[in-house]
Image (cartoon, helix red, strand yellow):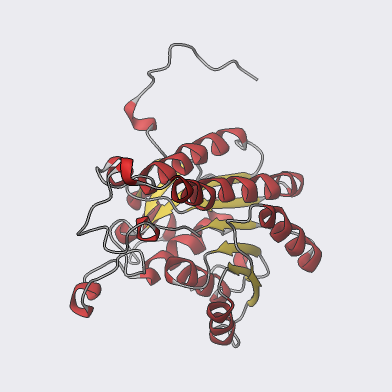
Length: 281
């Protein structure tokens, strides 16, 4: 049963044209959210809008390339102009090492082989764009004393795996930033969490595999139930956590499923290693 608190929530989802972003955008629209679906390929958005035509919520397609960083604030401005509010942000858009070498899994890319421009593109899209979008929505969420920011990073071991530069480092940057933002927004009614598939997902990020192999991957629809709960009123006190969607148990009540499928965001579980304590505010 869908949570009634999702009805009429305004949620921006980036990378909504395919893969994980498409699955989350549809899940939210099915639950009554008005989704501003952002992607850089118009044909994908047209297909998504057609698929969402009869869903309880709305789907507003917005074609924008987040590598052009000025588009980030424009997306938020257009959302506010259309709806007068923004309640949620799902940062899902990203690129993989395939932009450097399509067969990177079989033909590894060493860090010294990474072209400078590809490093910049990956950090712009995977880390800087989420920052700029979150920066733009945060004041509005704080003012309304309610907001949800969900960042799609990656498995922690992928962040440090050999031959995964610059994808791993760019997602590690977003993971660390998520922890920063959760702390900055603590007590303001705005939560920040990370949601990942919990394994290789059946998306374009995993090229060159057979249909049989794809069936064994984490399916994008696995992200649906967790993202709906994270956008709901029920997740009010759930922040600075990372959920593995593949561990979400639909047989449990959502708060229990979230608790079971989550751990501390970033590397908080390692413990304090800083030489100084933060200054109390």
